[in-house]
Image (cartoon, rainbow, N blue to C red; front, side, top):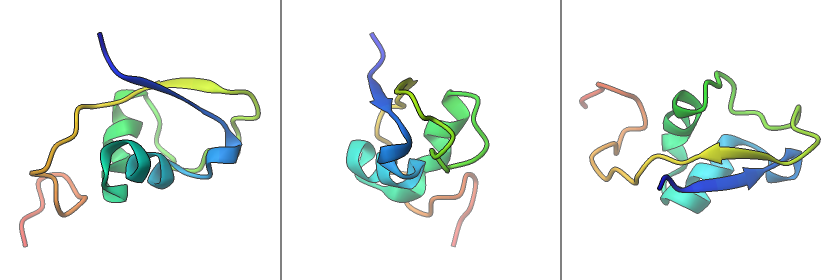
Length: 69
């Protein structure tokens, strides 16, 4: 069973959700990608919406897919 979380505009952005749920705000794009979203802003969600969460991935330390420093 996938992990899920209910979010609304009160949660701010997917950066906040990623920080709280995955321990890394830069992984917001993984939540967005999994849920068909393109914008980290949650202000359009006036009612709570359930999002599926990806599993935490410690290898994604740059926050940008396929980026190597």
